[in-house]
Image 1 (spheres, one colour):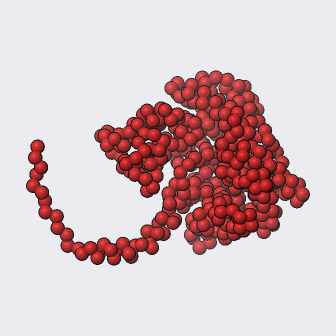
Image 2 (image 1 turned 120 degrees about the vertical axis):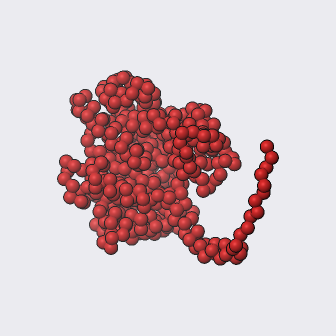
Image 3 (image 1 turned 120 degrees about the horizontal axis):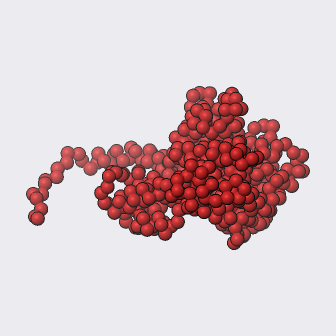
Length: 443
């Protein structure tokens, strides 16, 4: 079939017009790139576990895994009983249960924070000094030469580890700074800062407190000859002023800017934030309307900045009779699934008994939607038709979904590659379209 008549193409604007517009928008282009670089890529842990500084020990991670496995053995010894508690369908029961047990044996904790704040409390200076030095030594030993991967055999290290220091408020500021200094100095003395190092700054109320943290880290890097910007940190959102400032602006957005590129995450503090608003103790939960409002503001402020958002925790512990454990498991599972649907892919776990339902919720979330997501991404990548018209933004979301499933162990690379026709590099290309064109390479 021959080609039709070639159309004449005419324009009215001189080339200088486009050049002038581009020149006028150059500052905006630079600002957009600086403020909204997109997701940093790499793994985001599905949870953070906090362990008080005086409790943390060399076997903490393995102990948590063993206690979680013991809880399963006692209260849900097989896939059918666990599925019955959580309402999992027959198609998910076996795969989820098997993967949960394997995860608890291989990598029970993805992100661990040794706590020197609320979970530790005020102590004599000598005692906290010693605990901070011990935390540095134990974390350095767990990381097998500074790598962010667990040692062979699993259980001695988590992919991400660090401390939560005391906040920048006047009564505890000096103590928090000293603990951080001791901890970082100890890591350097033991071989260097591990790739998986994460620091948490709690109870941030003003952007100036974030700036102070930046200046502190700058001073440490300069004192020890580290690359500027090497050390990042998470910001905990635990006060109403962190969401809405006195002048009506969103404080949390200013905090991200004040971090000067060092902020890695925003973590919602369920109970401090709820109490700050006057929510009664019986109703302080991560699904309270006040919590939803705060996290929605955090999510919008962080979107596109490369700063990731984490949900909080539940204080209902799975302990006691089997009936009570099952009730707590159902609550935790439901809250975790609710958070995942709202794109909060990380949360806090406060007890070993929470870990089975954390992973069950995460694995079920990715496994039940994996086939459809993979099929849609495959059609998009191959330019094939289908019953859904997807756009680049949707392809980004689909590939991000599959990558998160791979990172946590819910999915295997062979099954994802088989269903999508994409390697991991190809998936990453779709997940970061501003950095690479996945239609050109990586498939």
